[in-house]
Amino acid sequence: MSLAVPPALLEAAERGPVDDAAFVACVRESLPYAWQTVSHVVADLNASDDDFADNVIPPPSEAERGQLLRALASDAIRAGLERHFGVRLAFQNCHRVAAFRPAAVDSDAYRRFVSARGQLLNQSPELRDC
Image (cartoon, rainbow, N blue to C red; front, side, top):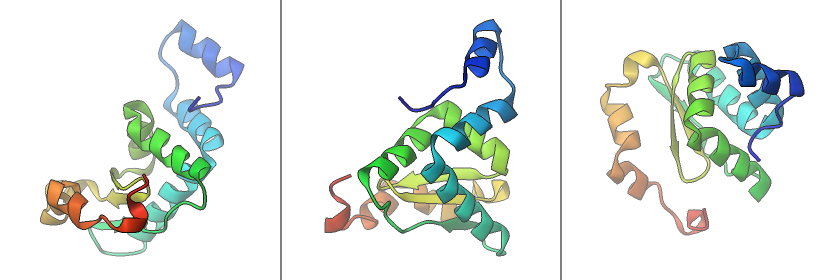
């Protein structure tokens, strides 16, 4: 299961659209490693003038790797994180999370990161298990 949904939030979802802040809080509580990783990448981006910042440190265990996969493979979770942090997220190799400034989404750096070539160049023997 990706998210541990509080009963009140589940009831709200059963009635109709849910508050974005409540959804993002559920993600933060349910996927703490993913939240922490994205938060750090966004903080690095905000502390620089670069178009993007990324995480290249593999998760400490398969449980944490699973959190990243669940967070970034879910359209709803990924979009919620992007709205919350005001960035565009990109993802490679089960751990390389990048945050791009919205204005950089059409940049060469973004296109290189999300390209097939970028994915292939980011491979290494220690990453092939993901």
